[in-house]
Length: 174
Image (cartoon, rainbow, N blue to C red; front, side, top):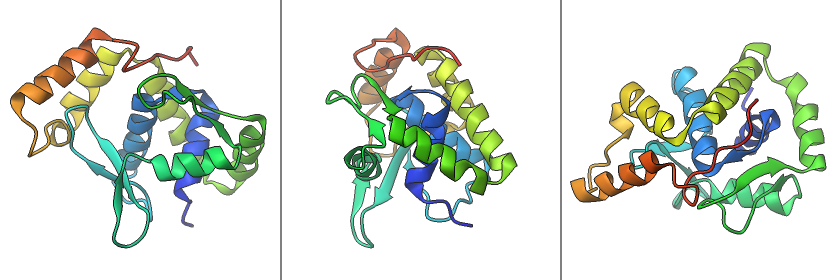
């Protein structure tokens, strides 16, 4: 069964609200732990900030991040997303989003649902510098984009290691 991309987001946020980096890495690690074999899922590209989710809005147009899916969920009143997102703030489920996530949960295989919950909780508990170390050590092929200058990646790493809440914000614990 193919799970729509938007449902993966709802399931990830079902555990707890996530900031942009946490959401991207949660979606990435779900994909990675399922042997990168999820039909009609997000694509991931290397960036100075780690795995960067992308998606096609049609057969010819690849857009950055996952704004199309997030905006769709926002328009349906399923998620709350601050204007400052993804630079600051967290995405969370509305009451309607919680009900929708709960209603789709029974249709998801138990192992997959447990994986989503485990990864979402694990990622949400890590400090920004721990997130950086995690993806740099576990998936180095996603750490350095081919067109990025060393200076650009160095600056990105400084921001991530500083834990600057304008760029990364930790959510409450699971």
